[in-house]
Length: 232
Ligand SMILES: Nc1ncnc2c1ncn2[C@@H]1O[C@H](COP(=O)(O)OP(=O)(O)OP(=O)(O)O)[C@@H](O)[C@H]1O
Ligand SMILES: [Mg+2]
Image (tube, rainbow, N blue to C red; front, side, top):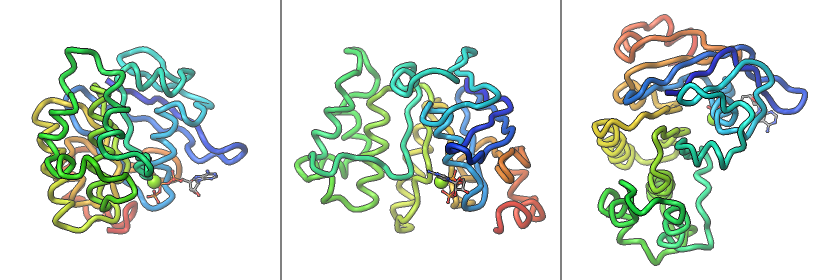
């Protein structure tokens, strides 16, 4: 569904990714792992059109999106939950959701009602401001907003960052439920156990490239690779 071939990207003069390739297959979850600063977020930003594809290509459904604007990539069905979550702090939970629901077609699978049913916690917080939410509630809101775009590919950047273990388990179960529905996902994570218990395929980013790829089961058993590239 999404294919990156020989991606080169970075910030101005600073190249961060030098020849990264990966594939996300329909209905599967791909985890992108790697140490701090390896270039995971940078790769996601290039997919979303927020950083330039300097060399190589990014294709969604077989068509290049390397020169496509971010809103158009989103409109085609790629939703992105950034590390920063980017919810509107001065708007209520309901307003944050309503803004995301605006562009949904009338027969959309994900409506505001369904998001609230999926994350009952958000239903209890509808009138609260975005700045009055716990970290876990913010993450649920960020995922809820992404679902309201009715994506075919959902991209998540460190959804468990800074969350208590009990909330991490809740997010785990929600992502597992989305996977059961057949939603294609790309997950960037520092939490090795979380990522490999959910993902089908794993790639490890190091030195600006993919340095390892295989199944979650394979990386769980490959202690040498974990030491070398993840510091687990
Ligand atoms: N806005 C920026 N300008 C210049 N360099 C940047 C910028 N953002 C990130 N970098 C650099 O790019 C490299 C990759 O950063 P990136 O954020 O992609 O790492 P990451 O794998 O997501 O790490 P983490 O696990 O800490 O989120 C790092 O060396 C970082 O310092
Ligand atoms: Mg990052």
